[in-house]
Amino acid sequence: MHQRPPQRIAWPDRKRFAFTIFDDPDSQTLAVGRSVYAFLEDLGFRTTKAVWPIRGNGTPSDHGETCAEPEYRAWAQSLQAGGFEIAYHNATGNRSTRLETCRALDMFFEYFGTYPSAMANHYNCDEAIYWGDARLSGIYRLCYNLLTRGKNRSRSVGHREDHPYFWGDLCRRHIRYVRNFVFADINTLAACPYMPYHDPRRPYVNAWFAASEGNNCDVFVDRIDEAHQDRLEEEQGACIMYVHLAHGFVDNGRLNPRFVALMKRLSRKDGWFVPASTILDYLSVQDRRGAVDNAQRRSLERRWLWHKVRFGTA
Image (cartoon, rainbow, N blue to C red):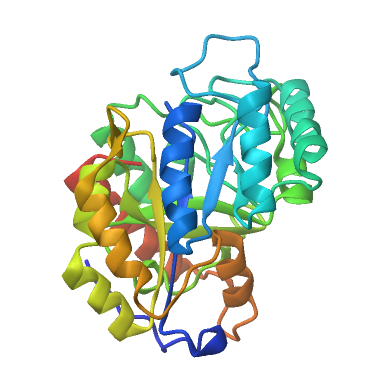
């Protein structure tokens, strides 16, 4: 469902549009990461890479590497030094107590010299903040639980002060932006013209942002095909692609050729290719940013729920 932003954005340096990638670390090995990010860097893109700061004590949800591995950590630090943003994807790839989350945030600060500006919840972390059915309100929460057969009902507890996994106060203290809804539109700003926005019903998050669906390579290349690129430029929009760069972008050490061709084409356009927090910081000073009202919240929840029905993704 396409929705135009209320006004076109005057991007810095008279750029025609903004584009970035928010990459979660699920299943990502050092070899795959190096291959994709070297390619992005060569093309002039500076994007956002989320990490797990610690390995943790439980069983990981997948084989993605963490900053507990020295070589992987050094590579992430080199990305940051080269202009990429390092973001947060919960403490590690499995549930974490408040103490473990505190340690992970402190380790993030030690490794990268700052607390994370942005984060995305990991699906396998019960301490996710306002996730699962807590993303939705009223009738839309009920519909979501019916559609998912209740498997995510009350599972997200990071915002619950009565739970040992609570860390909402730390999120509010340290993190500016949290990813929420994804939409099947290359122009994220058209799908969510309020971002970054605060939701008074979810006070432990300072500001939410949306993303464009690019979960794996097949979905990603469909979303950024030639026609969609041209529309993003025409609308002077902003795209924050939510993606797992470990899912199909590299096969036997070779980058997907369609991904390569489309990203090269995009790089030749007059876009502002900066990390997610840089785009969100710029949008946050626009005079239409702030807290969503009830009608705006319902619109976002309704359209995301429809996206969930159609695509079944996060």
